[in-house]
Length: 111
Length: 117
Image (tube, rainbow over all chains, first blue to last red; front, side, top):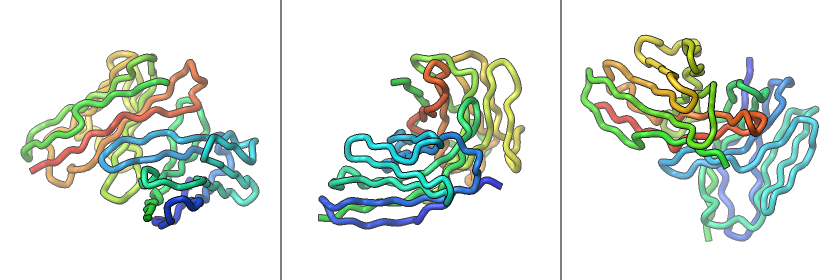
């Protein structure tokens, strides 16, 4: 069945780059998403990539997609303390269809 | 951008009572909304797909008589947790897609933290 996997924890120093990785199994996924969740809050969409793209950059965020290996990554440049949160990878076919989420990666940024 | 609002953000109720959670799309019409449940330090698990004007579609293992979903209008879906028990305590999140934006982005409500005592 559909499955999305992420590492559970990442610790980085403020100012360094963070790379959060995700693998998925559904090759028919049309869109892949990265969401951010701060404590006690809902999910905030950070960015998404269409499956026919291999890279998308949006300010400090860079998404890389290796469709062959079904591997997605999110790079945050110049990581700040405000980036500390849980980051969820999700995949879905688009349209009125559900998203399948990974377990989330908790990013801790320390001085 | 599109906004999805959830209410209440936090609720505490006694065992055996029912709790209603509202999910509203504020600036777009959503024929389909999704209800997720999130356990502490775990991912979001889809509970059901709410369809305007018709019955909700529940995921396997989700009791439809316990988690009542009503999608009575194009901007409002409600989830009612009936006869709540402490094990129903969780974070419930709804989401909707804006058809005017090609349904690419799923907007999420801020979530409702339910505590059953």
